[in-house]
Length: 192
Picture 1 (spheres, rainbow, N blue to C red):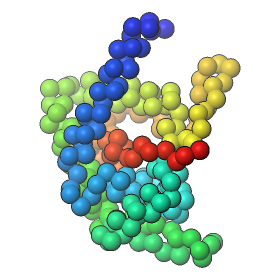
Picture 2 (spheres, helix red, strand yellow):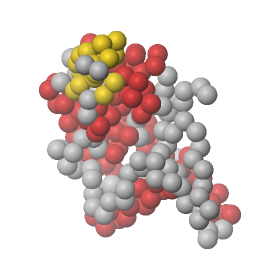
Picture 3 (cartoon, one colour):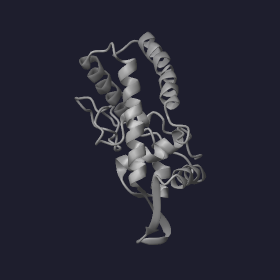
C-alpha cells in the first residue's frame, strides 16, 4: 500500500486536473457552454431519456437541468417529445444537428489532447486511460447521491461505473461521447 506522502502528492496532482478541465472548457464553442456539452454527451452515451434521468446523471437539480435542456433545445440540438408512458413527461432525443455538434465537441477535445500529449507514446496514453478508469471505478459512480458503502473485502460495489478498457477511446468518432467531455459535466450536487 502507498505511504501517506504518496497519497498527499496524489491529492495535489488531482487538484491540478482543474487546469486540464479549464483548457477543455476553453475549446467549447461560445454557443455550447459546459452544461450544454454535458447534456449532449449524456444523451449521446445513454440515448433518449426523461429529464429526471438526465438530472440524476448530471447530479444537479431539475431547475439547472431545465436551463441546460432549454439552451440545447433552442439551438435545435435536442427534441422533447411526449413520453408515451406518462403524458406529463417529456423524452429528450438528440437531433441530427445535436449529433453533429457532439461529434464536433469530440473532435475538438481529441485535437487538444493530441496537441498537448504529442510527446507521449501510445503506451503512455493507454496507461493513463487504464489508470484513470481504475481510479474512477475505485470511487464508484461519481454521480451517486450518497456515498457508496465499502464491502467487507474493501471494494466498492459496482454502481454502473465504467469498466476498464485496454485501448484508447478518444479517437472514435462513432463512439459518443469522448471521455474528455465527461470532465466538463457540471459537478454541482443536488442538495440532500
